[in-house]
Image 1 (cartoon, rainbow, N blue to C red):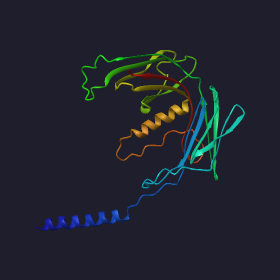
Image 2 (cartoon, helix red, strand yellow; image 1 turned 45 degrees about the horizontal axis):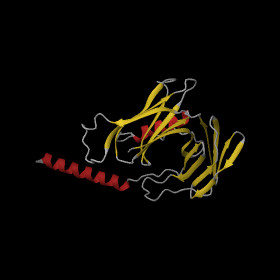
Image 3 (spheres, helix red, strand yellow; image 1 turned 180 degrees about the vertical axis):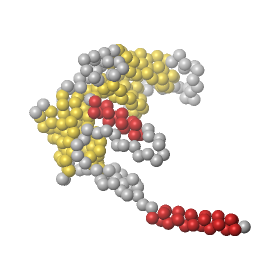
Image 4 (tube, rainbow, N blue to C red; image 1 turned 90 degrees about the vertical axis):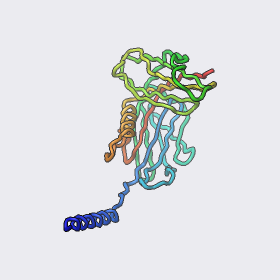
Length: 263
């Protein structure tokens, strides 16, 4: 019976040891950093400033007010207005084929970044039709119909191009895809393939944003970090073009949009 007592004693020791480790366990909090979400479209610049919080902090996002935010291009310097706490914007014509620089100053912190707005690439055509599989795929909502949607574009051959396609249904973002033209440079391609149940008067909006390489790399690394499934791994932050003690992104885009209403 001695071996039973030995095992019992060992279990007691292990339990005591585990209890002591758990009592001493703590999470270290990282230093606060500025978070920048900045975009320029052909008619508006928007910059949202906040700061990181502790992993265990369940409070609302701490937006940063009182910052000086400027955007420079073509020897011009534009100052953005703070519309609400942490939200800065400027409505005006921003030219394509142009380099832009963002500078954010808040207290002793300085953050800067550069981006390029390419010329827009336009959709060539699109097709919308009731799917041939409409009667084969069951649908609990009998008012909806299964549609196939295809959209085509021709990629410019003279340069490397980067795209972000965003699909909205009734103003709700449903899907995004970021791609480059490495496999279809200079070709006409089907850049959207969609099979979806639409109801009467539903709207579908498909936006094709032309972006620069830095924005393409940011979205790609963001997708990789969000899809990380390793139990004990800590994915890296998305690749950013920001300079300074900050996280986030700054990118410009030109855009072409398709819109459909289902009758």
